[in-house]
Image (spheres, rainbow, N blue to C red):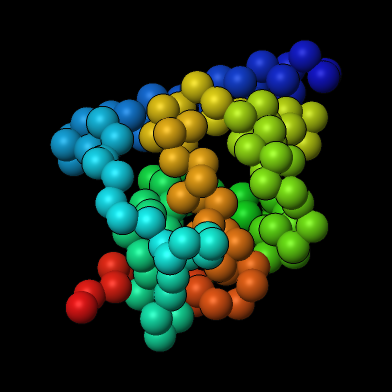
Length: 148
C-alpha cells in the first residue's frame, strides 16, 4: 500500500515535471530568464499597491504559477490538500523552505522539485514571493512588474 502510494506520487511528479518542461518549451521559456535588479538592499521584495512587485519577486510568482502549486496549496496560498503557505511561511526558516522544495515531503504528498531547474534556480525568488503573501504585503492573484 505504501509502495503503491509512493510510486503513484513519483509518477505524478515526473508527469508534472514533463508537462511543465513541454509547456515552457512551447512558450520559449525553458531556460532561466536573466537576473533583473533585485529588491532594495536588506529587503526580500518590493511591492507597490499590493500587486506590483520587483522583477525577482515577479519571477517567484511565475515559478508558483508554472508549477501549479495552487492545485495543492490554493490560489491564495490558503491551503487545500496541502497546508496553508500563508501560515507556514510565518514559521518556516528559509533553510527549511529550501529543503522542503528540494527534497519534498513525499510521505505527506509534497513532491520534490530539486531536479526541476526552473524551481531550483529560483528558490530565492519564490521564497520572496511567498513571504510577501504571508506578510500580507502582496495580494493574491495576478502580479505585474513595478514600472517607473
